[in-house]
Image 1: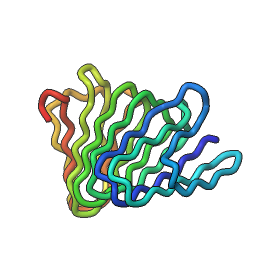
Image 2: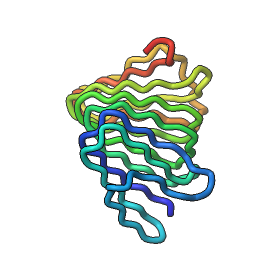
Image 3: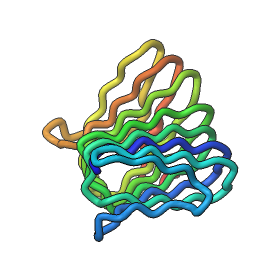
Length: 159
């Protein structure tokens, strides 16, 4: 499987982590549809969620509202977060571009010390607030899309 579409409703804390044995880990009361190349994972009304997917994924799309998200030990070609409200995303041990799509919200991205990235702002009235130096040769592109949204990029010590 290469493409993971994850919808989470009602969760405040979400952990997405890489599995080393090519398995998917999800709560027992989840709806999971899969074929050879794609997995759709729908999770509702669970306050704390742990989701494991193979550590080398091509595309991950996460649809979420008002949550804290921890992403660890994953490499990807594309990670798209479609968020609503206020979201906080903390990454550790990740590699690849992250797209954050929101309308009228605030997102905070917490990156580890030494994490190399560059930013791109698209959409209308969006802005990124970061005091961390960018590296335009990095493969870790952080892109903000949508409308009237603020993305704060911080280190763990500053959050």
